[in-house]
Amino acid sequence: MRIRKALFPVAGMGTRFLPATKANPKEMMPIVDKPLIQFAVEEAIAAGIEELIFVTSSSKRAIEDHFDSHFELERRLAEQKKYELLKIVKNILPKGISCVYIRQAEPLGLGDAVLCAKHVIGDEPFAVLLADDLIDSEVGDSTHCLTDMVQSFERTHASIIAVESIHLSDSLNYGMVGLAPNVHDYPNLLPINRIVEKPLAKDAPSNWAVLGRYVLTPHIFKALESLPKGIQGEIQLTDGLARVLEHDALYAYPIKGKRYDCGNQLGYLQAIVAYGLRHPKVGTAFQHYLNAHITLAAESLV
Image 1 (cartoon, rainbow, N blue to C red):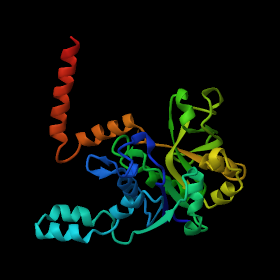
Image 2: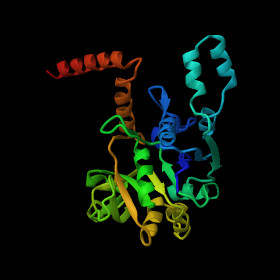
Image 3: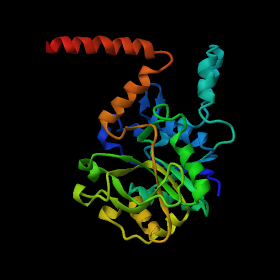
Image 4: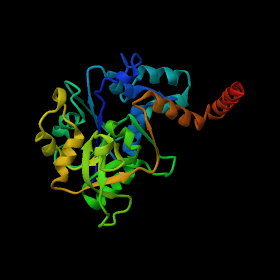
């Protein structure tokens, strides 16, 4: 029951960031000097994942290139004796980690992306990570979110979903869960008794929202296959999880770190500021820059 495989749905169009995403995947947008997808991959590897499965599209070749070798670049860096940069480039993926790329013909929902990987995942549990949700483990807890979730799965053997409390006015943007008393007393987990995709605030079962981290059993495949297709043929993972809940336990993992929603411009900018301030090379200079501009802004209001 060990979690060895992680799924990264990266076939979306990234329309919120046009024109930046017209030719470049949104998952390759950098937080200072590291793309969003690499943060998610590093989190998966830290949790013990050995096989990375990318559900991609024809416009996402840059992701495959990023995790592949670049012999010309490596040769030039070696010739120029830029060994620190060479080490960074060569160690984007540690040895022993394999990558699989699956083409999703159309972006038909997160549930469809999961189904695309059924033949690769097989009959074993797996993780799902959405690169848009950047979870900063250095804020609130030193352990990566997925590491905690994988360790929790080893005790429960049940599907686990990362959640965060939000304002109910935002419920239309999230899957929302209702929580039950924790009769099993699993650390860091709360039992889910209801899960709904993007409800109105008045219909939301609580203020706990589903985030882009999942540890799932293979039962999810049968549940997704049994769903009728929704608007424009989409299949939603949240609806599949509601089917799973009819027969199996489902747990919520309230995240401990700080989550940045990099699927929108404000969250993306917030992440850049947070990670930029502690960057080993530019963090101090960036702090001075921000302080100066904050002072100027305050003076302009006087």
